[in-house]
Image (cartoon, rainbow, N blue to C red; front, side):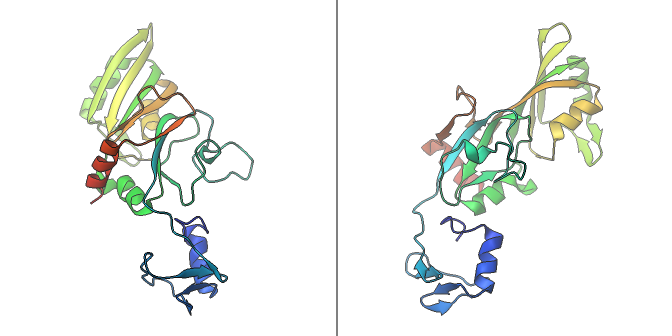
Length: 228
């Protein structure tokens, strides 16, 4: 029901509990398995057409956009700038001011697997900071204590932009909430800009800010292998 764009997963469970969903003319039950190729699924008597295949795309998320379905305050969300497809969901999150690579898919199961800590999918960020970039690199190699555990990047390099301004390229595989920003705060660095340039096999490349593109066949194949 979620993939077909009828309702969210939680709302779909409510529809089932209310007896509004039927499988081959019989009321559905929560947790019931169905074959979408042969079973007829209806909601309030209307047949549900399942989309064929899964859709994957990447958005170059701008700063000042929320990673959420909707916002009660009316602020712009990522769903205002990606193609409207039934069942589309984001893979992980980027916070309000963070930019860059954000994946979307209609494959909810793979989205969950990609963001689960056990998957250890590498993510690459470039964070522009004011402060001592080389000292941050040295500290990171020993691990930086955050409130929810030690952060030790897989890779970290510093590139001088101008006096006191550095680009830190950081590769992590944990994906903890606001991890990069908290890492910089702990080291006394002031974040000017934060961009995720790569998620797993998918690189931002030259995709303009606010634009999206379908994943290539190779990218999809790698993601499929990572989620098996």
